[in-house]
Image 1 (cartoon, rainbow, N blue to C red):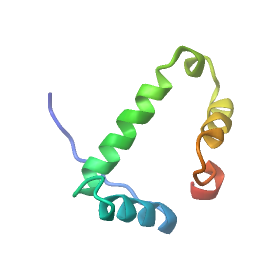
Image 2: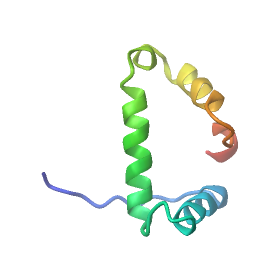
Image 3: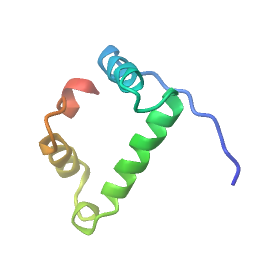
Length: 75
């Protein structure tokens, strides 16, 4: 598998959560934190009930999960 580098920008709130995850020992690199988060989201997105959702339903469903910041507040 050929690996490729991806660069992106994030909001201050997203950056703070990333730094907090690293500080709490979740991982020692930003790349591993982001990779783990992406893998978890992709696993979630593969659930049959989630696969049937359109983008707007998916955003609403993700907003209902846990006590995190709403998608529209962090995007």
